[in-house]
Length: 594
Image (cartoon, rainbow, N blue to C red; front, side):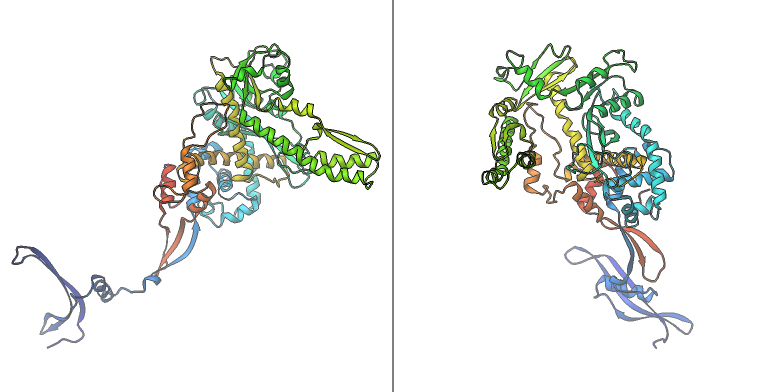
């Protein structure tokens, strides 16, 4: 007799060790749907169905349902209640921690967390401070550093705190990268750039030579100090009309007095390390000379080179019959070494550029000549104004002889001046007091050409990565803090670019230059990257910014299971590129930043 109301359950039976006629050992599994009931006080079982023919996952579902579990479709099993970009913030934060940047900024606290968040944000998504405040709520950076929902007053207070910490921060970087142990050459690179401001109330705002081509805009100047490889170490902000020599004097005072480095070789361009700066470089504050503790490497201006080439001067073309550089001396530069270089590729490029500019100027002048000849433009003053507008466009006025009357205009090329300038094409002369025993001629050329690293840093700071310009701040301290944030973000970017070189188009091992005077060559590996666009595993190479955007697709999700009110955090499955990016910086993929 079949019992009524008995419980139904799944029973699995496994038989092991059965050997068939061929001697093969087999295991058998079966599953049954059974009902349990009582008969006369005894518990009995009844097989309701044989489930052995069903797939295993179907049997599991029947078993789970009979045990009271609520079964839902897979698509409805969980709900993602929130999702934030995480991978890019986690990677940059991990690199900052690896570099010891938080400790370098100062003691732990609210101001340090905000300053660190501003620096990381400048790497990830450069924008105005107000835009950054909004962006923090849309990424795990804001939640994990507890900066989401911060007020503008808090941001400005953190910037003021950071600006007061600038000397200590830069002294720490100088100890890492300019001290004798990490920098046995005792060499530092320095250059000056500018960016325009929006507004007219900043005390630093002034009109000056705009390196951004923003004529008519007020601007600031800022000088960047780096180690020989281009790592940013210090930055100084100056009024917008500051000249290169004045900035050089200021940074030398910083290195001596704030960093305590008494022996250095400063590398700067010809407009920065002038003869007057050299004379003052190793003088006491009272003007008395002191031992030559500071060397320099810079270049001569065109008039000085022309003087060396004149008559029987020490710089003659015969020096370059078999080589591209030669070391010479001159009584005009006592105690200094002069390294003369001739680059034929540069000479041809400058000659071609000059001819293009002259031809372009003549093309613009042709309509003016026609107007004067036709009598539609008269008067020496009016003609001169129109000619000045045209001839200054390409800065070729020195190569033209212009004769103006009230009714005529004559323009001719000054071939003698053109030839005199062409004679210097491809030539440059470096000057330095550093003894040959410490730095040979090729090393001097290489050190000077390493200024390209500072130019690269300026490019990253101003446009490629960090978008420093334009500057919207009004107070002098805020402007300095803004530039400092960008410099520290550039320090982070410098290390990230190097670590992630295998994933980007950057060449991992730039080739050694056999001839330091010749143009730089791209490595075969970098050329192969640009050509094939994919690595051997088929993964695409990316730009630095493209890699940051790809890392942002690694999100942190808030997951809630159906039937519960509990929410857990879960990362999306990383791609192989994302895993590799974290491996290259020596960090695991964290669920939270801290």
